[in-house]
Length: 166
Image 1: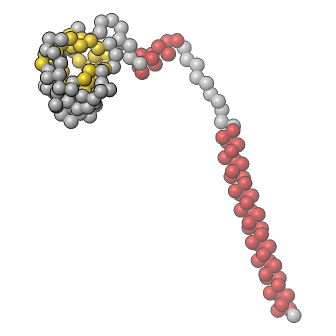
Image 2: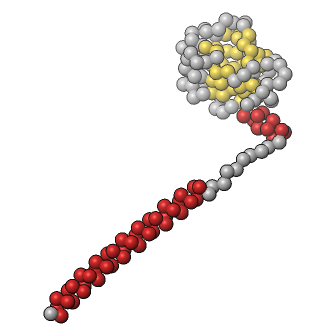
Image 3: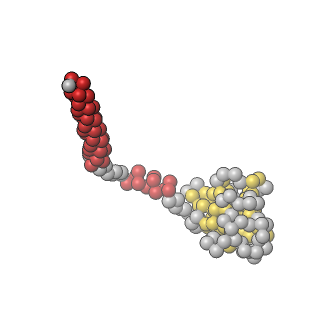
């Protein structure tokens, strides 16, 4: 009889251990979920208040405003634009063959759909190549990053040549 009681005791003990393990597992999962939701609810709501000078500095950095004369470009040669005409740049202006560009160069086969960006900033007119196939050039040098244009610089986009006028 002791053999049967020993087997029953072992089975009861294993069952009690399994139940205890499951209870501990569920308590652990409950504690983790409770901690995570408490952290989400307790996150502080911060507000940012900055002064007028700081706001102006941020605006100037992210929303460039041209103060003073607008940048002007003289068309020297172009299959898409009339030679001798002027382009005024007062806001960020994209050039290319696509319909979404401010200056469309449809007749120039060497211009990409989104070719270059002209951006007036407080310190002058900047040009940036937008990953064009044939590149953008200033005075014969390829533009690899945003570059400040000076008065008299010749900007070449495809077969279109533009001279910076001030």
